[in-house]
View 1 (tube, rainbow, N blue to C red):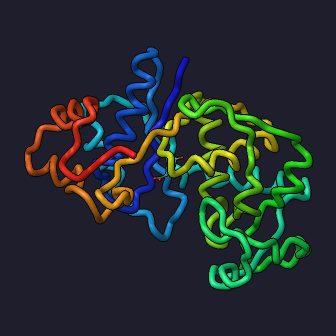
View 2: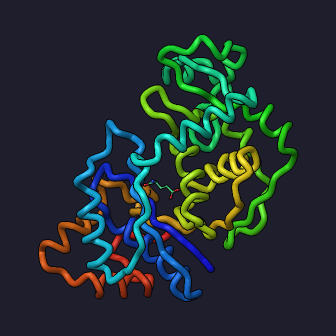
Length: 274
Ligand code: GLU
């Protein structure tokens, strides 16, 4: 059975780009008689506003989507810690106290997500840990797994190349997991078979595939969809573009009509799929 998911982080209202993403994931499951899941990605306690989750549910219902909700990330912290401990026991994580500014200064390469961490703390002892984040030694991890592959339904088979982004943070200073570790574990726990999300997360999938190899997790397929952008090619962010879905819903707009327009690819003037 095909299982897809929509996994918003509750740090702002949903907008048109989210509606598009949710509809793509919902419809990919629906055409195959599969299941569409909602997961609230509230691992970032500082930025998360729990009250938004209720508004997200109302938005999805307004768009005419049905879903099954799976546990939010804040309820799964023990599982994340257990996985991190396993990776530490394998000797693949090291503590890092570098600040963003230090990394920007020391970096000599730019990867898909900005300055590539140059490995400054790679030889730190695992016991020098107070106030540290924990990074994955990506080269050591790849040496252990050997070459890995993953399949995007649109772009085809990819050889996993997580090394282009450098040693990513898996355990944050203030949380037991980063997005990469939490989302990978959640997709496995939720039985997701087709991870559907925007093209902006394409490079993250190389890391997720590596984590699946290290932690013996099932390997799903992926569908990275184009993003809704404005005239300057900028992704519709939470403060840009059209009104939030909640604003439109509360103003009495018809969500089913909006969903039909999205399915037809008809977007407001100045907003494009890219
Ligand atoms: N929580 C992420 C976001 O809101 C999406 C993560 C994913 O789909 O893997 O951007």
